Image (cartoon, rainbow, N blue to C red; front, side, top):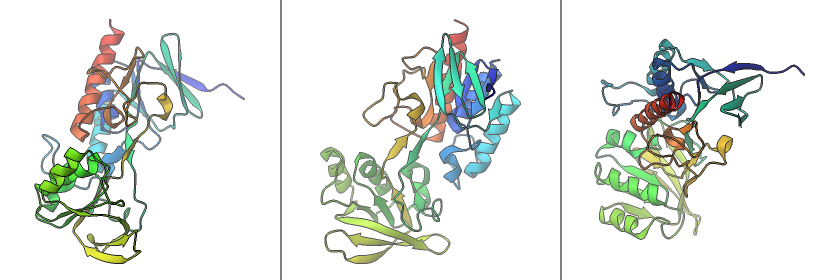
Amino acid sequence: MADKENESFDYIVIGAGPAGLSSAQYAARSGLKTVVLDPAGAGGQVLQITELENYPGVYPVVNGADFMENMRAQAQAFGAKIELVHVTSIDKSGADFIVTSKNKTFTAPCLCIASGAFHKNLGVPGEAEFTGRGVSYCATCDGPFFRNKKIMVIGGGDSACSEAVYLSTLSDDVTIIHRRDSFRAQKAVVDKMLAAGVKPMYDSVVKSISGSMKVESILVENVKTGELSEVACDAVFIFAGMVPQTELIDMLQKDGNGYIVTDENMATSMPGLFVAGDVRSKSFRQVVTATADGAIAAHSAFEFLHR
């Protein structure tokens, strides 16, 4: 079998979401030979956003696909290269990281992991069809679109309960559905949620999501009685958990939820290896924080190379 083609860079970025493309732009602009590796091209979770209205300076609203296309064009305009490849392994030999795909290897002394995280889906009929049209996985992103509307929250952990509290500031009609008879979240978080007027629906699961052009109702099953009921609503916020994509760098330190731990410079315990965006352990995950992570990682890589 022929040897794989190899190309050398100063900086390799894995993941072409906001963190990865921001990092590539800053790195290329500072003169680093930069490549971004992603099997799908520019995108990430932002592609699920139909109206991005809270990114500073981007107004009026844009859809996520257009926003990411602009980020891609901007990064390439500064000289970053984008390769549509699926990374199969990451190794290190001497000072260089070796990133392998099916037909090609990439080497560089600096590497940024911006592989992101993905939402756990409920996997029920209507969920995919109505994502962006009433189904959401981010209260901060989409909650303001449903001010004074009937909102359903799905989940029982800290994230679900905390997001329900936020949504209760936008609407007086927020219900949280949980499959058990008590929440998994910390007691203080649950107490705050209930005090905010969020109505709990225990022992229940969502079986389907329905509507015409947008969400209009959900079908709910009581897991103890088997009783089915249709509940009218305008929005369904799903917080079934997030899964950070860390399989390529499983050896790095993680927090209790599996996110990779870095310092404020996005640096990991391995010299030259940086992490940015939703795969990183942090308190707030938004497009704007992902792009900031990416810029910081690129600056840190530049300083690392010129130290």
